[in-house]
Length: 369
Image (cartoon, rainbow, N blue to C red; front, side, top):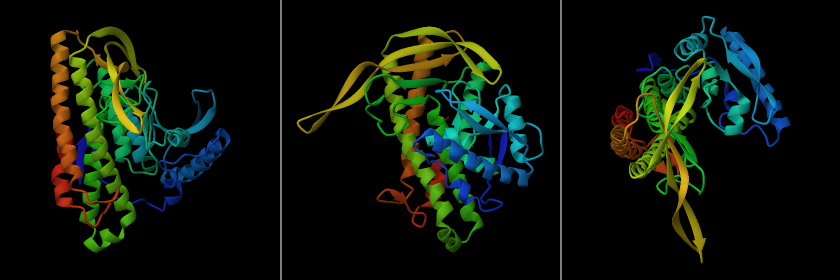
């Protein structure tokens, strides 16, 4: 199955050239409770990954980075030269986004328990375990690439409807409608990026089913369950994000705002843009005599919308209303996709899920954007 995204033709990769279970074990896991163990595990993982990269003819270098506390840790930086798929992708992204590098950092992934990441300062894209092992069209990587592309477009002078950030300053969640996913901080484009993840992982599992008999697919529970788990996560997170976005955008429509200049950067590209800032109420839940009550906390959320062009009340109102309409439609689309998945208690069942339903419903969320 193929899909064109961000100018890149993706072809589903359903298997690895060799058994990488020892490396993939670390996906989404902490590498230890202290710096020493985290660095020790990081070096162990990098040694194993280097062996695989050398075997595949991938060009790379080992670099040292520093975290916020000044601790030095090693990463793999993919070279923009070389004939491997990974090197070609590093070159493509570098050309599109001001030389931003693709790096593989078990240290950062372990500390955040993320599958991949985009550095909000625009200095790097952190690729996933699956990506570094050769799955160039990995959905976690492409999710982060979507974020990078949003801000690359703004830095290059294009207004993007979903360029902005939401940040919790006080309270327990940005919105009473979502206290489970991205409830403390989220890029505004997290909603379309999550819709993309839902679509990509659905395409992947459908291709897996196409290449296998029903009996073979039901026996290969590991990879199928992993993909279906990701699909369920995207559907749940997307639905919650859509509610949150509607709530915050609706509050913004009724609120005053300020405009400040802000420097955005990605790679070597920089641009001073307009940052429209709303100070909105956040959500907290307090308990008294065993009963919980939802309360609003004034000025608990900072909501920024980025703009290249001139700012006016009319343009902001139009943009916010468009965001609300799309978020409402996306909420419905995520809900319909989620209902296709058979869940036993909290775990999806690969043998009882309605894949025809999923094939029909899952792409609809991303089509909205």
